[in-house]
Image (cartoon, rainbow, N blue to C red; front, side, top):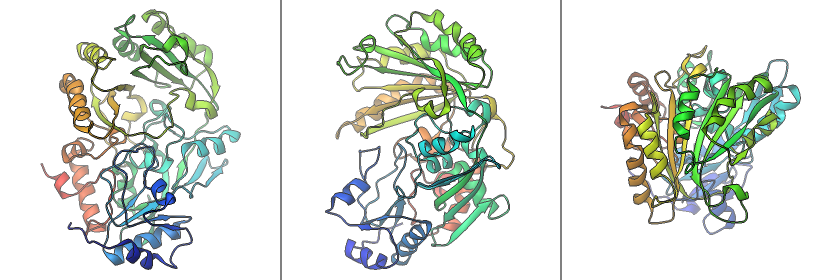
Amino acid sequence: MSETIIDSAAVARALKGRTTGPVHLPGTDAYTAACTGYQLRAPHRPAAVVAAQSAEDVRAAVAAAADLGVPVAVQATGHGRGAPLEGGVLISTAAMDGVRVDPAAGTAWVEAGAPWRRVIEAAAPHGLAPLSGSMPGVGAVAYTLGGGVGLLSRRYGFAADHVRRLEVVTPDGRPRTASAQSEPELFWALRGGGGGFGVVTGMEIDLFPVERIYGGALFFDTARAPGVVDAWRRWTRTVPEELTSAVTMLPYPDIPQLPEPLRGRHVAKVQIAYTGPAQEGRRLVEPLRAVGEPLLDTLRELPYAESGAVFDEPDRPHGYLSRALLLEDVDPAAAADLTKRSGPAAPLMCVVGLRHLGGALDRPPRVPNAVRRGGAAYCVSVLSPVEPGQEDTARSLHADLLAPFAAQRAGTLLNFSFGPSDAATVRAAFDPADLARLAALRARLDPAGLLRPNHPVGPAHAAG
């Protein structure tokens, strides 16, 4: 669609009296802070930011944008962001972070801006846990709309498989309830199809009886154990679905703020989350120790409330680009090439991630959704922090590093694509029939294309 240029004053006038939350305009610190997130690269530049305090504020913001004919987007609560919004209305849901747990029903109601940390903390006293991701600071709703592969995935499936109800404001400014009984097509699309169908203000999700896990990581020096990825791949073929694991490779700088054993090394970090007894977890992990002497070993029994320690990911905002592929298998030669070429000699810092899939991720949910499943045993991703002017180098480097996996490619996961996705990437995330169905629904709900999601589906993406 062509852009309609409306200045900030006009947007502010359209919003005046409609919202209880503040409206931030360019030139203020609050506006600048609201336009970024974990991703500092290419921040949004809207005409105004609505700091929503409630579902009614979201409805009013969407309705005002629709009245003006200007685009509207939601600030990402995770690491991803598509093309930056220029002009229009940006909605921040950060203040909408309420969580209510119903221990008898085994469910939680989660508002749009709540991070997984709040859900985990609210569920833990009842011996329950959500299907949260590796980083507790990531927003629960956005993660779930993209499917959601986390620490308990091989045991219980995608986070999107266990959503009971969503409250959403569609691009016409109308609040709707999406469930298996109400708006079933919208319910199907939102669970795995992303945020292109409306602005979700809250969701009801299942919780699971997980109080403790055996988890943490083994850290290996890739110079001493160059075959660690292939050893992990072979090991994953032997483990039960109660065990979810991953490998992260990255170069650690030689600085005193880091643990001494890791400084100045290219490290492969094998991450483990096992829902069974700790004694059995220790037995299952023992074959990995044959790879070599770990630099560090953080494996232990821990309460699920401390599950963020498994990946121990930094929560400091920065600019970055990434690319991800789903794989039928991990070719040993490709793994060795990736280990070697993503190390300190790479032109940009590379954080390589490989995750073991399968198990419950391959089984269809009780109520069908838009998540693509089956055929992918692993996911591989490459992320690089970037400064202005390094974007083309990063994209070229990532494509080059992942090229050896082409023969095993089985699609992609949009939740691991931390930047704008082209049509080919979006197509690879869905079954063709599902993508056409998603595009048709989006065209019906948002014919003018006002809503700007991170990974839009539309007729152009459905073609071919």
